[in-house]
Length: 258
Image 1 (cartoon, rainbow, N blue to C red):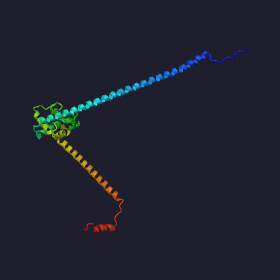
Image 2 (image 1 turned 30 degrees about the vertical axis):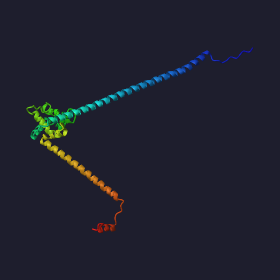
Image 3 (image 1 turned 30 degrees about the horizontal axis):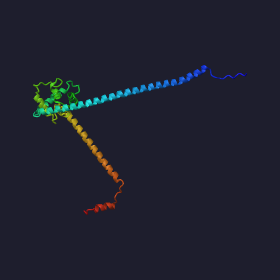
Image 4 (image 1 turned 90 degrees about the vertical axis):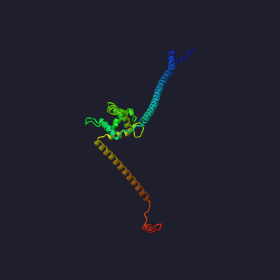
C-alpha cells in the first residue's frame, strides 16, 4: 500500500506565534490610541484652565475699572460739594486788598526760591502740583491753607494771617466762583509776587510767544493766498486770451454805456 504524502502544515509553535502577533498588533494600536487620547485630554484640560484663568483676570479687571470709575465719581462729587461749601462760606466775604495779596504772593515766591543760587528755581506750577495732593487739577481750600499754615509752607500763625483774611484771599483768587482754584488762578496769584527781573523775563517770553504766533498766522495766511492765486491761474490756463479788438470793445464800449 502506498504511503500518503505528508502535508506541509505549520508546526503548532509557529501557528501560536502568528496568533499572538495578530492579537498583539490591535492591542498595541489600542494602547497607542488610548495614550494619544490621554495626551489630547491633558491638552484640552490645560487650555480650559488657561481660559478660566483669563476669564477670571478679565472679570477682575472689569471689577477694578468699575471700582475706579465709582471712586472717580465719588471724588468729583466730593470736590463739587467742597467747592459749593466754600462758595457758601465766602458768599458775604469781601476780597482781600490788592496790596495784601501781592505781599502774600511775594512771601510764597520767596519760599519757592531756593537759598542756594546754584539750585534751580522752583516754578509755581511745581508748587501747585505739590499742594494738589489728590491730582484733581484744582486746589481745595484745605490744600490752599496748607501753603500758609504748614511747616512745608509759610508756617504762618493765626496772628500773622487770620482765618478771615485767608478766606478773603481765597475769595479774591477764586475768580470763577467755583469754590476751587485752578492752575490758571493760582498762577495769576503767584505771578503777582515774582521779582521784577522774573516778571520782566516772563513778559519778554510771553511777548516772544505772541510774536511767534503772529508770524505763524501771517505765514499761514500768505500760504492760503498763494494757494488761492495758483488755483485761479490753473483755472485760467485753459482760457484763450482776449484779442486787442475784444479788449478795446470791452473798455471803450462798456455794457452799461458809461
